[in-house]
Length: 175
Image 1 (cartoon, rainbow, N blue to C red):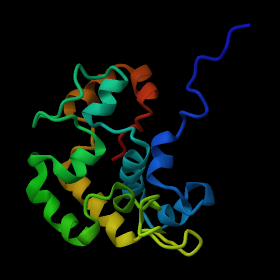
Image 2 (cartoon, helix red, strand yellow):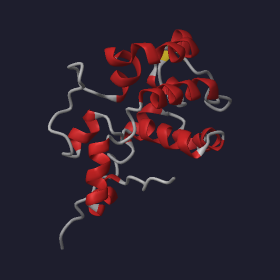
Image 3 (cartoon, rainbow, N blue to C red):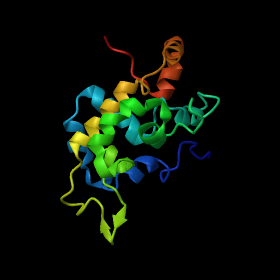
Image 4 (cartoon, rainbow, N blue to C red):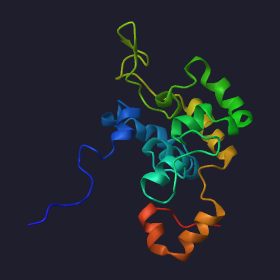
């Protein structure tokens, strides 16, 4: 009997679990309930790692390279915090994030596993809640760049080949 060829259970959700140490507590539900569908779609891309950024597209063989136009690997952290292409759009997000700018878990509404002085940077996991204003600033930044939307070329390709749309799990555009 052949073994299943899908991802190993330990690999599934690894990126999301790294971002949100409280994922198992179901606290992300409260976060998503405060967002409209467009905001939820953007934060879902960022929290799962399944985006239109080159690192993911390269991983699924939809891009020949993982390199950003600026020359570095186009990862989620690079896109949000350091890509020179988005410096102007990043200003408001940087202000909203304050001292925690650069903390991916914080930016995406996750409970950070990072500790300072033997204590969790986010405090008690039982009483912690994501900062919705920080999450919205992150979403607004991503929206302003337009980078998490399919390019015209990718959109045309997906429309021409419905199986590719299913593979990437891209929702059909709605008017």
